[in-house]
Amino acid sequence: MKKIFFILSLILLFCSCNRNKTKQSGFHVKLTISDKVPIPDFYRSKGEFYPIRINLINNTDSTMQFWTTSHSWYRNFIFNSDAITIFGTGNDKNSLLLMTLEPGKTLTYNGYLVVRNISSLRKKTDLRLGFVLITENVSNSYRIFSELLFDKKTKKDVIWCDTPLKFDW
Image 1: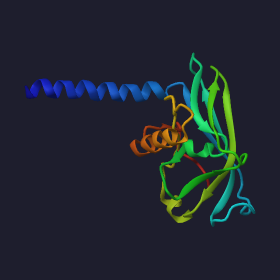
Image 2 (image 1 turned 90 degrees about the horizontal axis):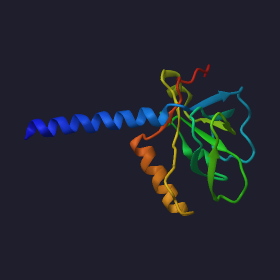
Image 3 (image 1 turned 180 degrees about the horizontal axis):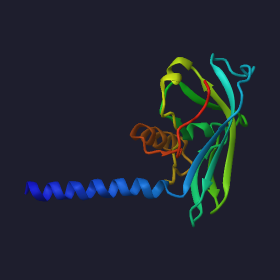
C-alpha cells in the first residue's frame, strides 16, 4: 500500500512539474528598465523610481486570453523580493479586462519600478519579475479576480522572466 501511495505521489509530482513548464513555454515576460527619474508628483510614498517597459510575448501557436484590470494592471506582476514593486498609471476607472494576445504578438505595459530598499536589492543575485496569468472565468467579479490573484501569488503560480534582472542599483 505504501509503495502504491509513493508511486502515485511521484506521478502527481511529475505531472504538476510538467504542467508548469508547459504553461510557461512559449509565453515570455521581458522587462526593460530606464534611468532613474525624480519621484512623480502623483506618488505619495518614498523610493527610487525607474521607468519600465514590460513585454508579454506570446510565442505559442494559440491565442492567449487572460484577465487583468484597466488601472491596476501591475497587480498581475510580482517580484521575488519585497524591496521592489511596480507602479502603473492608467485611467481612474478600474474595471476588469479580458485581454487577448494573438500568436507571435506582444503586449506592452509602461510603468515605474519602485525600489523601496536598495541595500536589500544589491545583495539579491536572482531578482526576477513574474506574471500571474488569470485564465479562469471571473464573471466580471473584481472580488473573484482578486482572490485568484492572491491565491496564485501565494502559491508562486507565476510565469517568471527567463533571466534575472541585470541592473546597476
